[in-house]
Length: 267
Image (cartoon, rainbow, N blue to C red; front, top):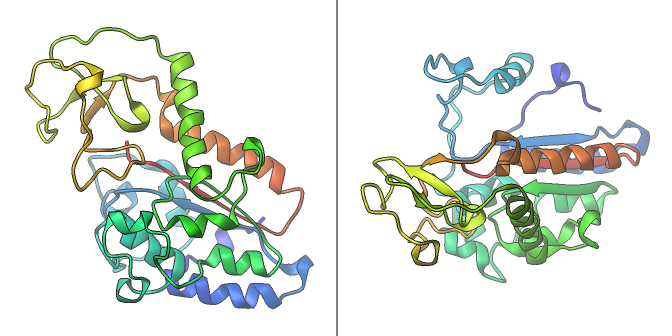
């Protein structure tokens, strides 16, 4: 396992470039790689950055023991284009992924991801959580807990597993005034919209009439749902994703070298 105190955080371009060096290294000297990715988080949404309104102790610990880039910028403030850039180390002008809709196109992006390069050089890659990039990039991953699913089936399979969990753990109930039913992965679970939600102030609507959002509807969990979800913390989508990643870590650490990504969904 890589010692976090000795690990230097890499830019997307640097991470992809480093894969070539890792591939040439002797198997016994290749480090295992764990990537933790947060979603929809501004540079100052971190108490380590001086933000007094929030608490992020775990991310603060990583920042303090590694490298924190104060002037880092994203290639694009839109999910799929930004993620494709991070995965390939290439600017959005070259990835051809310009909008969220591009993530679903079959031949989008001609470049390999760093996990694809690592897999070609003897690494075992696994990925858990939100992907939201061209589905052909997921073909390198296999989910042993779901019969070896890969590609778009892997993404769909993970959401189905979570839906099964909430169906078992969350008892259905009618809405009360001020609530609406969530959509996407949280479909059918009550939440209290805040003022930026498009259904804020409306009477409670049946789950069957809860429509998905417009351009922000990425099919991966959010779909313009903004507010407080009536759900215990231990069965949120974040807890589910982290749990799956930890289970994977216990398994893959017995067969190094590996690369494991845990990417949280927006909540």
